[in-house]
Amino acid sequence: MARLLVVDDKDSIRTMLEMRLTADGHAVVQAENLASAEHALGDGEFDVVITDLRMGRGGDGLDVLRKVKERQPQTEVIVMTAFGSDEVRARALELGALCYLEKSPRLAAEVVPLVRRALEKRELAMRGNSLAEANQLLREQLEARTRLGEMVGRSTAMQGVFQLIEKVAAARTTVLITGESGVGKELVARAVHARSPRGQGPFVPVNCGAIPEGLIESELFGHVKGAFTGAASDKRGLFQTAEGGTLFLDEIAELPTSLQVKLLRAIQDRRIRPVGATEDLEVDARIVAATNRDLPAEVRAGRFREDLYYRLNVVQIRVPPLRERRADILPLADHFLRRFGAEHQRPSLRLSREARRRLDEYDFPGNVRELENLIERAVALSSGDEVTLDALPAPLRGAPALTPDGPLPPGFSMEAHLAAIERQLIDRALSEARGVKKDAAAKLGLTFRQFRHRLKKLSGEAETADEAGDDGDESAP
Image (cartoon, rainbow, N blue to C red; front, side):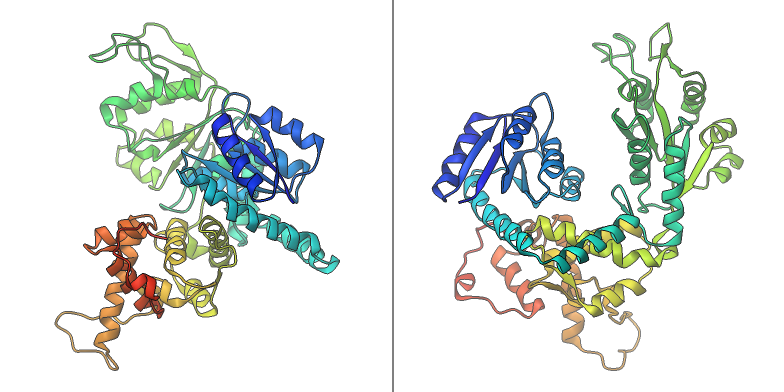
């Protein structure tokens, strides 16, 4: 019999899970918030903790997860929520959660097998001999040297970025992060914030290119009631929201020229004036900006103020593209494989030797974001415990290009070519559907049964009799 802790601010959820898990032979303790969870952890050891992500005042599920790992590192944690995001999901897994479960009408039934898997993993860990423990400790020590927050970097270039982050974090100085799209500029900004004295304050990101020009001043500085049509009440701006923390201005080169001088004044004087107001307000927010453009060239072209550029560029952190730090490709691929494997409840997934070779040779024009999406898609397409070359997009598989008017290449196979096209379309549909096979089938104009048949055919699997008789109305497994 295992000892479980269920943490949720809703009595109905706690009671439902306790009844179902007790019926499965476990002893269950309930906690309604972080404080009561801490009290329970102090009273005894638990085998598994199941915690809601969003709760009332006094902490959330990530705080519970941290406390469990601090006090009882061997205890497995399952995080559940009705409101999830990729960022929070990734954070939970990085902090040591076994998996991340979305609440549904089948929550109680879905928790039971996860608890059993958690107990099996815990038992294996507890039975590990001293050599296995020493090897694990060594792996953790080596990995710690190649990580900073959620960033992974073994290369000399990224180690330099990590060192610069550590140096600049403690100061209040403005930081400018540069680099191509997809290199992870926001992760750098978050690392600077987390390691600064403001780390407990808010981190407020804003994409300057995603807000219409007519609204961005109000978004940044706020407005007073009646400032313009539709301003029915006072509104705090993002500078005020980031009070005591960090304001991250992504794509700063997209900021309209008319707003650049006001931003410059806000940075220099630490004062803002909301739209329609007659008096300034003091603000205390550290500014970290980022861009994928050449700002000196933008200054020369008259599209970016020179004085603002120098004010932002007190310390510049350039994040190199992935092709310039090839030593990071496979560690990043393994990192994403662990994350998505855990999300899909397939923690034993690994990359085949040929898949690793092709990944290591590819230039990744989309940088880390492209690699992340590629691994997520590969996990969705793979069967078994190994991600093979077939699960990778055509450019990485080395499929020969076929021009409309050119001759057929030597050794051309129409079946292989059509299969490659079909695989690319399935890849794209799964990517757009975020791995949900039923939605991907709809995007391709197929029934779920037709989609599954094609997917299994491409992966070399045979359909079972039950699958062959499926009418296609069920959601993807």
